[in-house]
Amino acid sequence: MGTKRRLGILTSGGDCPGLNAVIRGAVKAAHAHAMEIVGFLRGYEGLADPVTYVPLTPRNTTGILSQGGTILGSTNKGRFAATVGTSNRQELDPALVAEVRTTCEQLQLGGLICVGGDGSLAVAQQFHENGIPVVGVPKTIDNDLSATAFTFGFDSAVACATDALDRLHTTAASHERVMVLEVMGRHAGWIALYAGIAGGGDVILLPEIPWDFEAICEKILERDQAGKRFTLVVVAEGARLPDGRLVTAESTQDRRQTRLGGIGNRVAGEIEARLKRETRVVVLGHLQRGGPPSTFDRVLATQFGAHAVRLILEGRLGEMVCYRPPHIESVPILDAVNQLSRVDPNGSAVQAARALGVCFGDARASREPVFAPPVGVPVAAPAATPTCFAST
Ligand code: F6P
Image (cartoon, rainbow, N blue to C red; front, side, top):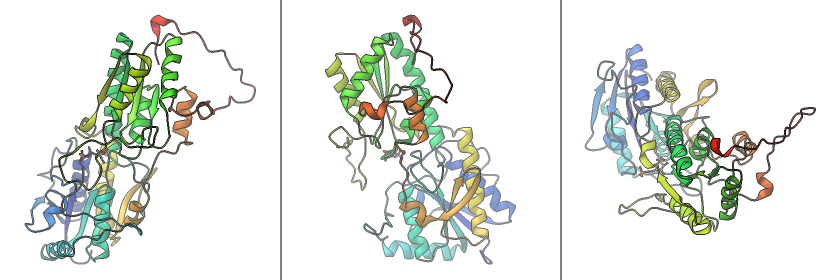
């Protein structure tokens, strides 16, 4: 970073648990190397006229590790909008880029840590192409960035959705109801899949696996016959209807991205209509994004913050920190934003869930358990489930 001993950091896009842990990690690492660090307010907006920032120190960031949200604030889809795909590239406003360059020069920033999801990292990539000294930190509850095994925020969101399923489980069993839980994740089904497995979901509907209502109803009836007269359905907000349409929520705001939401109600309505079974819906919404980060997210985010400072010190601008278990590494930001990660329908998590009898709403052939017992291991006949102890 040459002779410049000052860094900047900002948090951009939708918030998620762990942002403050990244900030704290970066502040402590910067101070350990005798560098100053400033935090820009409200995401990229803080870099442009009127420039707004606060000096960050170990003292004024004390106690933020366990806090949800971001002490710096964030802007989702403000004036800074960019894409970097080859076919659909959207350029940043050159006037804004010039303002950001001036800010970095006037504050003599040796590096700017941009913490964001794919949209915010596309902005960071264009800054890099324009000579602005950036490094990226991936954040999103959706876990849809393929350059990193996990993004921080995901584990906390899954914990929240799992807790919701645990609670729905007991009331569903008491009232012999079907409960539908709609979770976030945009076009990736990671939250639905992981929470569905952790919370004992009976039906999991993902954007990555086409499904139909017949298969869901069949599963509910199958459970009824086995004496389990309740069913938990987990549906990802981006799971398309059987005819391929997405269900979107109305918004009064001028949005560049479609706002997903409403699939849970569609699924519940159809189950009630077809089976005449009492069905209830919970849309978990922003509860998944709020609150304190999980232990895993605190550890991951802290490492990301410290590693981002290290990238700047080593002059590795234009790179993004990532988690390649068991190591924290880095990749070019461009690689990260060009490849989104989606659930592999043949991956081990889906296979394990299928082996347990979880229904993904797809055709029978693909629902058969894929795990064959090891040769020589006798296969026991399934035990009858006593109705008084019916469980998932
Ligand atoms: O990308 C994170 C996310 O929470 C998605 O899962 C969800 O679709 C979206 O953001 C919600 O955005 P907003 O906060 O603008 O409603």
